[in-house]
Image (cartoon, rainbow, N blue to C red; front, side, top):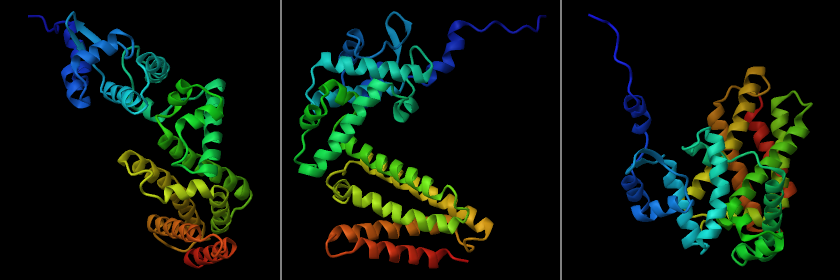
Length: 309
């Protein structure tokens, strides 16, 4: 009797892959978009073709849900025609496909993480950010329309919505940029400083200076109504987590080297960041009355006493 195992059929080999995919009816239930509309989106090239297993059977990667929701948002909130949405989606789908390494499937992580932008894309994004920041500061967030940003940045509506689904996304990107600027400045200031406690003392004035320079933008994050949706709250929490993580790593190293007293790094990092945020909010309540130099000086002294061995 032969011990040879029967060869795997194409159907058997494909089965594990299909387990992670969805039928069009499942995608329809998850998005609230009819199956006929989904099929139409695929037919006109608005969405990439699904994995076909039979003439009348197709399977969809879970990230189709995110893509369809994005299409609906551009339709319902931005009132863009399908042709313009198709142009935007074609660029995004190429990016997502390249990052996932698959001709058919779209990686959800690729969608979330973004991409390395070409010079032309980066230039458009930088102009949007610069214009948005200026207009938000000059005339206020609520008084600034997306059309104002598009016109003054010298870009098309398609270019704007290729980068951002709306001015809320732009506001969050500006918040991330503030963190990037802060990290860059701190890195330059502490490059030759071996003492971890001294590094933290140096970082505090830099943090407050970045807030002062972006006062109008920072004010928007204090207004809960601006970013009331859960995705935006989650993004802001992520930005805060980056800062806490940086501080925690510095504290851990300082404890090991003896420049910071024995202390719980997680608790200390969260407590310090929380106090600094509160002090920044305190200054914002009345910038003319509350002196930032004094606040900075007291904050540095407070943290020094809390961490010094």
